[in-house]
Amino acid sequence: MGVKAYGQEDPNLQEVVVSAPELAKRVAELGAEIADDYIGRDPLLVAVLKGAFPFMADLARAIDLPVEVDFMAVASYGSATKTSGVVRLVKDLDLDISGRHVLVVEDIVDSGLTLSFLRRNLLAREPASLEICALLIKEGLQKTQLDIRYTGFVIPPDFVVGYGLDVNQRYRNLPVVCTYVGPS
Ligand code: 5GP
Image (cartoon, rainbow, N blue to C red; front, side):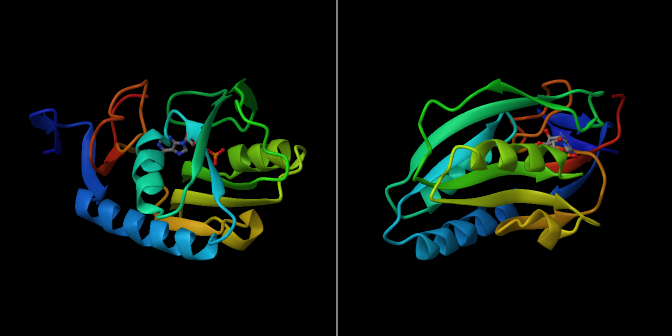
């Protein structure tokens, strides 16, 4: 028995890790917290494509401030279910972020290597401030070490898909986050 996806049970999907109502509630809470913290210094939300697209869309609407949005894309070498840690920028931002209050919107942090790369890359452009909002963090990571200001959920270290996360570009539009146990 798998999780239901696209109208039928999918044996590659094992269990729901974060349900749609849980996602909606937490995103609303994060949005309210961010709006409080950023009063008077409107943030520029920077989402990391493609995985962060639904989170970005929901979070931006949950922040009751005039935010701006921009996107960048990175690619990490490795198989569909394992990151290698070698990251390459494949789409850069359109906006100049110097002097801006930048909030990076990330889908999931596993080893933290992608985030370290992004942080270094963005800090070099001299933003006024730089904070991270990650929807999912895999258990076992040192949050303080990675300095992630806003976290949605800490989840077990299993490979997950849905709500933006894929395996070979599939499952990004699932409304839940669930474990994937199929071929990689
Ligand atoms: P890190 O560099 O922190 O090890 O990995 C971060 C990136 O790897 C994420 O932005 C995401 O693209 C991918 N990733 C890590 N864990 C998962 C996972 O469980 N599912 C999916 N679909 N992608 C993941």
